[in-house]
Image (cartoon, rainbow, N blue to C red; front, side, top):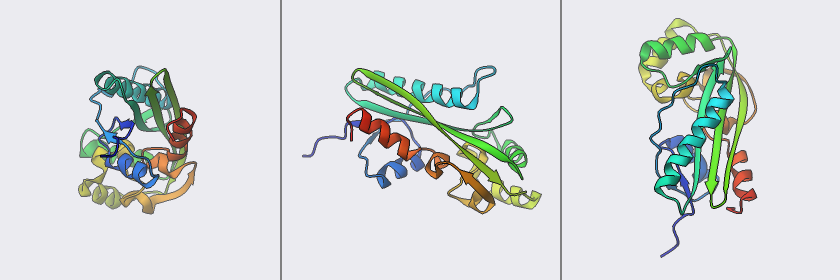
Length: 190
């Protein structure tokens, strides 16, 4: 029987799982159950890094012999954090904010193993085309925005609205694969 993968992904995100599989990284899944509540005045980068760290620490407590990989993605615009929408009204509000504008997408990544705790982040800039009310309403009705930071999936129905992307596409999907590979390599995991 082959040995179990040394890395545990502290996430229930199918998008993160798919990105890791496509990168050829073996892993187990153990989702973290951590409340995602921004602190007053916290930047998108600080929030994403803190949440990734809290998720990794929570799973590491349950699995202290494993190396834990956790991530958290946030969309932010004008210092407002656009997390997962609370409902359809909130999703439509976020999409109206993003319409015709550039925004930032930051994913915090934390890798915790024997003798190390490494927290980093990647930020990409995304520009949306102007959106019509009917487009927003139809996208919200599809249900796709409901579990996505910023109420959209770049790899899904929102792809048609992307005018420009500066940075790592996989970061906007939810896991900056290049950064993760560098971190794993530096800590002897790859």
